[in-house]
Image (tube, rainbow, N blue to C red):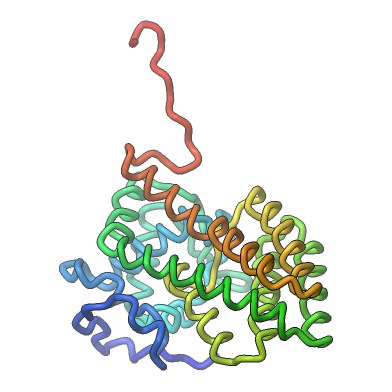
Length: 289
């Protein structure tokens, strides 16, 4: 992978832009860290990266026990310096979100999906740019509907084979989060390539990157995976059979489930009272009612 990260001592927080998500349609990598966090310039790059990582973890983009991408890869994904990533990791380790293991087989591993400061970090990450995020989610739904519809009309025998192989790999992944993610990416790439239009492939990938906060990860849970598996099968069948309108409708429902619903649920939870997303309200004891 080409290292796009600047040198460790290079400033990496340029002035924000009016349209925080405009990079999706440019040749640059989409949604740089500085643009996503333009309203919060008083925070350091390390603090912003830490906040975004905590948000991705709360969404299930990274799960407890999982090793995070390398420092170099995170810097390239977020278009920041490796020193800023290092600062973020040090902060998260001190707060108990991750554990750093040295030596062979080492790395940075997620420790918990929620910590004492998670709600505030998520607010700082998502709320300032929520309107833009909603527009990007809407754009993605429109684009993926068009892609699936077009794929159903243009798919070739090679595309059908690629779809079937990716679907089989997703089934075989079972509860292996990394294998599921790899197969999921291969499946949606096969759908986009079936349009026979490389610009649609690139646009689909950039939108996927944007709605996942710049990380190469998707919200994950066993429940989401089971539903996604059913939707993948239905989408592949509709494309292979040439049922274009149905394929488009399935794609919209699928992307709403896997990303948009997860983001909206997280926003609702931190707006409500900041409790962890998987935690139910606790009723008071009889003598406290």
